[in-house]
Image (cartoon, rainbow, N blue to C red; front, side):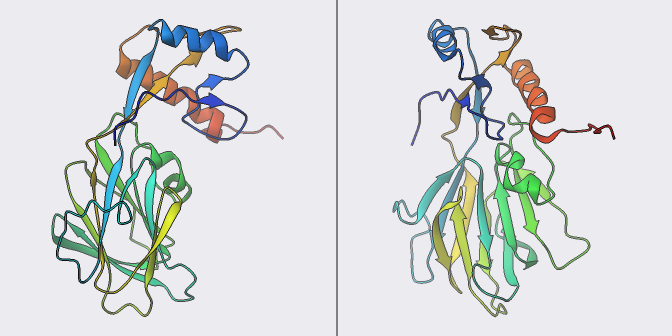
Amino acid sequence: QSVPPVMAFHLGSLGFLTPFEFDNFEEQVTNVLEGHAALTLRSRLRCIIVRKNDISEKNNDPHTSFLVLNEVVVDRGPSPYLSNIDLYLDGKHVTTVQGDGLIVSTPTGSTAYAVAAGASMIHPSVPAIMITPICPHSLSFRPIVVPAGVELKIMVSPESRNLAWVSFDGRKRQELRHGDSLRVTMSIYPIPSISGRVLGPRAFFIHSPARRHTLLVLTAQIPKCLTFHQRTPL
């Protein structure tokens, strides 16, 4: 479940996890191998589907246990009806989500589907889990940030007219029936991401403490990826 450090290269698509340009990849890989690199530990979510008749809540079956880097999404699937999803926090019922679905994301995933659904961006060093409704049938339901140590339980409400579907980083789509539950916790196996920044015509690394380095990389990516707080002249 643990993975080696990941070095991601930018090839033209939108993303916050690709700080390296591919044009001079050989030089940048050499710098990393020489130890001139800063690591960012990007948290992952551990998701377990507990079926109605399954007596074990600690299931390690690869078909029902998943690790995600960005988000787990519970939605209404092909049904024309709104989803009714019960959300529990450490065993206590928090709310019933009525809408198109629910996004549970890591800080890394807060810049992906969640930010498109109206959530805030969270720095990857913040130990937190973001809960974001998808098109809620409510004027007051806003994204919620909870501590990383909690357990979330998501179930199809007994009053729901339809089932729900769950996907993990956009893959391995599963059906969630009445009586089934999805348990989400923070995984103890983060992904170490190698972060860097281009400071001129040549690629170099920022020789500074890792936390400050990560902040500089994130703030550099925001205007590049989202044109944050920029106004296009007429």
